[in-house]
Amino acid sequence: MASPTEEFSNLEATEPASKRWPDRITRQGPWQPLSDPLSYEGPPSLPMPVQISDKASLAPFFNYLRGDATGEKPEVMHEPGHAEVDLLEFSKGVAYNDGRIDLCKMVTGPPNIGDLMNALRSYASGKHFLLGNNIVGPQGARELAKFIEERPDQYETWYLAGNCIDPRGLEALVEAMVKSPVITNVWLKRNPLGPDSAEALARLCTQSPALRTLDLDQTNLGNEGVAKLFNLLNGHGKPIALRNVYLNASGIGAEALTEIGKYLRHSELESLYLSCNPIGEAIALLADGVKESRTLQRLALQSCGLTGSTTAILLDAIKGHPTLQTIDIGQSYATEDLDVRFNWLEGEEFATSLHDLIICGQGTGLRYLNIGYTPMTCEDLLNITEAVISNPTLVWFKVDPLVKGGKSRDEVKAGLHLKKAMHAVRERLAKNVAEQYQGMSYEEFHNGPKRFLLSPPDVRYIDSVYRNRDAGMARRGLKVLDKWWEEGDETLRLVQEEGVEL
Image (tube, rainbow, N blue to C red):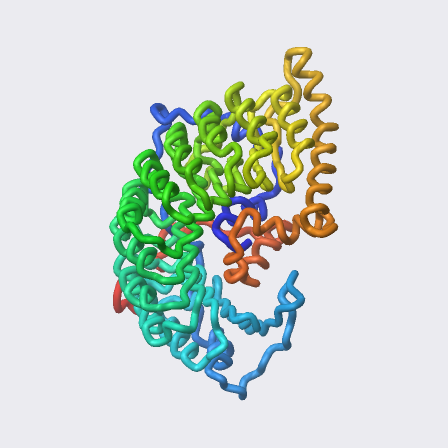
C-alpha cells in the first residue's frame, strides 16, 4: 500500500471481506444533499495514532546515516517483491540501494527530527525521503526546509504524510522547495494545511521546475481552498511540470470542480484523484474539462455520492477520449470513516452511456474500469459484461451487483446468466493482458503492472516496507490498524505547540 489512491482503493487490506458491504451501500441509497448535507471543509487531517520514539531506538539508524561503522549492521536483504532492490533494516529505519530512506511510522517527532536531519547531512546516497506519520510538527517543517535549502540538488521525493505540518510549516517548505531543480514528488496527505495554504501551494506548483506529483489528500483545503488553488493555476498562463494531483477527501464541491474543469482544458495533467468528496450531481461540471483534456490518463471518483444520470454526462464526455485509460467510479473502503457517501450508479441513461463507452473503438481505449458495487439491474449488467467481453483493450474491470436476481422473469434469467458472463469477462481480460504484456499471466499482471494503470510511476519511490508490512498483516487478520486517537491523548496538541517538552 503506497500511494494515496492505493490507500483509498485498497483499504480492504485493513477490513475483512464482508457480506455487509451491499447492505451498507443499499441502506444509504442515492445521496440526497438537501436532507443529508455534508461538510465542504473536508475530513479531519489527523495522522494515525502513534507514540513518539525514544532516542535509543532511533540511534542505530542515525549512526549508520552518519557513517559510523562501529555499530551493528543488519544483514542485507531484498525488498519483498523486488529482488533487484537491496535494503538494510534497522530497529527503526530502512535504507534501500535505490536511494529511499524509510522512516514511515517510526515517529521521530519534534524531539528527534533535528538529529535525523543532521545525520542525513552525512549520507550522500539518499534520493527519496519517506517520513510518513512521524508527527514532526512546525519544528520539524523548519528542520526539513533548512535541509532542503542546504541540499537543493539531492532529494527528489519528499513523502511527508501525517506530520502535523500547518500553514506556517508549509510556507517554510515551499520557500525551500521552489529553489530545488530536482524535486519531483511532494506528498502532504493528512497534514492540516487548510484553505489559507492555497497561495503557497500554487507557488509550489508554478515555481518548482520539476514537480510532477503533488499529494494533497485530506489536508483540509476544502472546497474553498481547492477552488482558490486552481483559480491561481488557471491564471498562471505558463506551462508547468505538474502531471499528477491527489485531492481525495478534500471537501470538493461545485466551486472547486468548476476551476478544476477549466484547468484540465489547458494543462498537461495526467492523473486526477478526486475520491471521497461530496460531489454528487456537480460531477457534470467536470465533463467538458475532461473532454477537452489531451493528456489525462487516470480519473478516480470513488465514493463521491455520484448518481447515474449526471455521471452519464461525464461518461459521454469520456467516450473516445484520446488519452484516458483509467476510470474508477467504484466504492472506497474509507467511505464511512471519512463521512462521505457511496456512489449510486443506476438507470437507463447511465447503463447506456457505460455500454457505449466500453464499445467505443475511438481514442486510446479504456484499460482499467472500476464500477464496484452497483444497484444496476441484472439485465443492464449482463449487457455491460457482454460489451466487456468484446473489448480488446480492457485489462481490469470490476463490477458487483447489489441485488442478486430480481422479481421479473427477465431479471431472474439475467441474474442466472450473469455468473457465466463474468467468467467470460475474466477470460477476455486474461487474453488482453497476455497480448499487451508479452504473454504475462493475469496473476502476474495483478501483482505488478496493474498498479501503474491506477497510479503514476512515482508511487514506486514512496514504497515503504513498514506500510506494506502493516497492510499485509491486517489483510491476514494478524493486526488491527489504529484509526482514532484515544480521548485525552495530548500528543498532537504538544506537537503543534512550540517549545513544549515531549
